Structures are given as structure tokens and as C-alpha cells.
Length: 100
Image 1 (cartoon, rainbow, N blue to C red):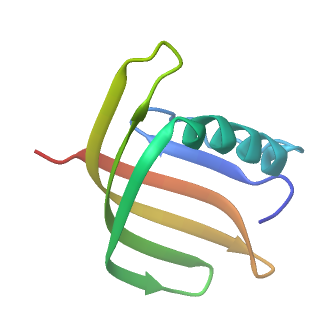
Image 2 (cartoon, rainbow, N blue to C red; image 1 turned 45 degrees about the vertical axis):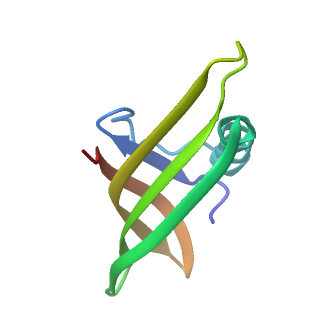
């Protein structure tokens, strides 16, 4: 990843701006986010790649505990688009929906 990587997660986080410390911010956020997970499963559906982008479609589900002790679970299908600059991921865009 580039140091200023941008991350957009639609519809939850529509901002795709890149910050000078984007990579560090992403590491901090993902460490916190994944810290409460006790189970995670993922299945690759398909992928495509082009000149400066990779698209990955996958299903995933997770379970875990929140800081207050309550439990959560979810299942989603997502399309992740990784934009590339000089061979590194510069922007990650996630388009997801809750599976029913």
C-alpha cells in the first residue's frame, strides 16, 4: 500500500480522501475493528484485473463480542476495488450489502 492510501466503504464511509498517514490510520482502525472478532470466514467469488485496478468479489461472515459484552454476527457480499499506483494499492473502495 501507499503511505497515503485512501479507503472508502460504501454506503457507510463515503469519503475516499487520501491522508499522508492513511496506511497507519488503516492499520489502527483494522486492529481495533478485528480485535472483537472471534470467527471470520470468507469465500472468493470472482476477480478481475486491469491496467491500474483489481476487483475482487467475495462473501464473508463474522461473529464476535463488543466491548460491552454483547455479541454480533453478520454476513455480507462485497465488491472490493483496489486502485493501483506504481504497483501499490492507493485507494480501496468497498461496495457491500448485507446477505439475507
